[in-house]
Length: 105
Image 1 (cartoon, rainbow, N blue to C red):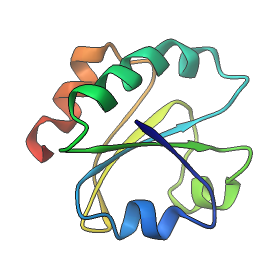
Image 2: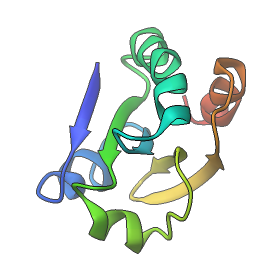
Image 3: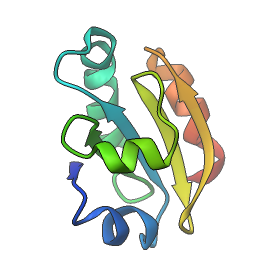
């Protein structure tokens, strides 16, 4: 399951999460964001008890995006224990996204 993150639930869902989070910074108008969406859904299912897949729409939560220096989307960030552990930018194939999270699950 993917979790929609907003300004009001970012702290509890991501920063205070007991398990690592893969956060997808995206926007509705972003073609590459739509390209990786099916892979993120699959990862959310395959790793459901090991990592939380979260989506932040940068147009709706711009203060979160700017606080993490998001300049291009899609940007994927792995959060663990409240801090960024790993990140990648662009429409990555599923295998690369899995490699991004592998050491945290």
